[in-house]
Image (tube, rainbow, N blue to C red; front, side):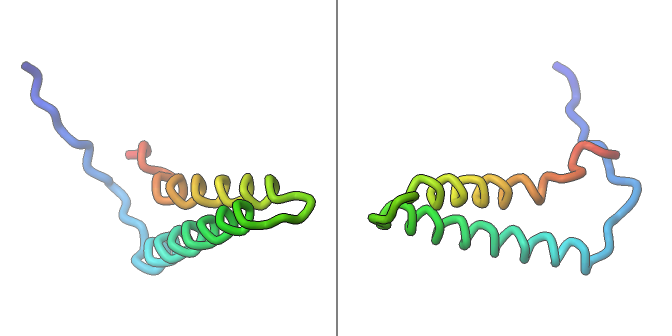
Length: 72
C-alpha cells in the first residue's frame, strides 16, 4: 500500500479573508434555502426562476470555500 500524504499549504490566507468567505458562504446557503422555499410556494408566473436561483446560491455556498483548495 502507498502512504497517503496531505500537501501542506505554503502560503496561509489572512484570517479576515477566511472569516469573510465563511460568512459569505453561510449567507449564500441561507439565502438559497429561502429562494428554494419561495420558488416552491410561489403561485406567480416564474416560481421556477426563484427555485433555480436558490439552487445556484446553495451550490455557490459549497463551492466558495473550495476555491483555491488544489493550489499548494
